[in-house]
Length: 187
Image (tube, rainbow, N blue to C red; front, side, top):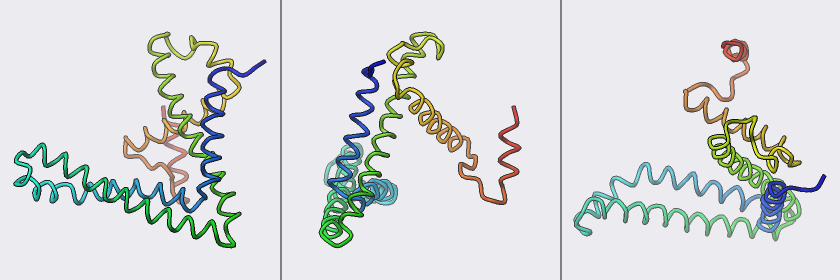
């Protein structure tokens, strides 16, 4: 059996992520991811004060809010990327460079798999809604070689999001393992 279009897309995402991770290195990859987390925190804590400061200058609250969002997110993004690239370059040119690149390869492949799984969730949402459920999925999905992996990883992502949404423990502590097992067996 040959590769389906879904297989090709998944291989391109995972392979592309791995190659980019190899090129950029683990330190740059992780710090780049941290930049996005810093953007969220900066917006949470700085958006309202910057909006208030800009309201008089811009003239409208909505305009000030948009400008504040762009300024806070932009400054943190470009500043964080600058730091990530500088530290990543130093790591890649040091004696740890080969290890950094090998770990970056794996981290990039993992990011590609997560992206492919999120895309798969979106495709499944559309095809299951239009087509009538999981038993009537198109053959280009069900016959693909990557279908079992995407099915498992996307189910794990959906379960993680569902537990977070309900406020349940996603990663139960060692002492809470029995409580987690009891909740899993509940209907």
